[in-house]
Length: 253
Image 1 (cartoon, one colour):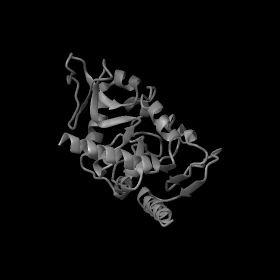
Image 2: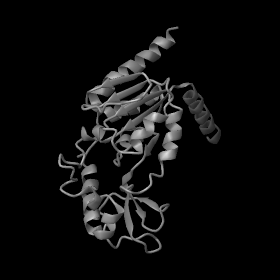
Image 3: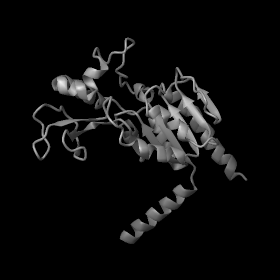
């Protein structure tokens, strides 16, 4: 059985080496179609709170109960929603391409849809970590409260990258973007850095798709750029058709 497993792994690796590598950058827009709120209102508040009150080390130090309540509500909502067709299409494309997803979202909808290579730049809502040991990270699907400790008696906090904190996965994300054959950007205003700067690391010969109902203007990008001012679901239907057709045309020669 071990030999059989190794053979299957070898076949999988060999197949992936022949596939084109598609890197997908996703933002809040793709999850909004599943019913997840983007939190930020027109006045810049998050659910009525200043962003620094609920998503910063300063806010955590000032009022941890408020921060925990905010993320407990977000976590509870996440458990009531499902991946949408855009998430599912990305998972389906793994049959034809080597798909790598780099997401700013803290939900698990990409994973639930079946995507296997997902990097969360800003953390994960269904995980918590120790305030004293960043490497102590565990799964967590219920409310997190003051008095919930790690094994050494340290308070647990949401496994979220707050404003003002380093983004530990950014270097790994850059490495992946640099080796892309195709880049797809979905549902992001391209305003939050360093995530917004990732597209600048793609090779200039790589085609770029940008899907968003209200796309930002992209300056100084030498790549072939196709902007689709559509929802994530409608945009990914079009992109999937184009990508699959390109494979079929290649196989005809």
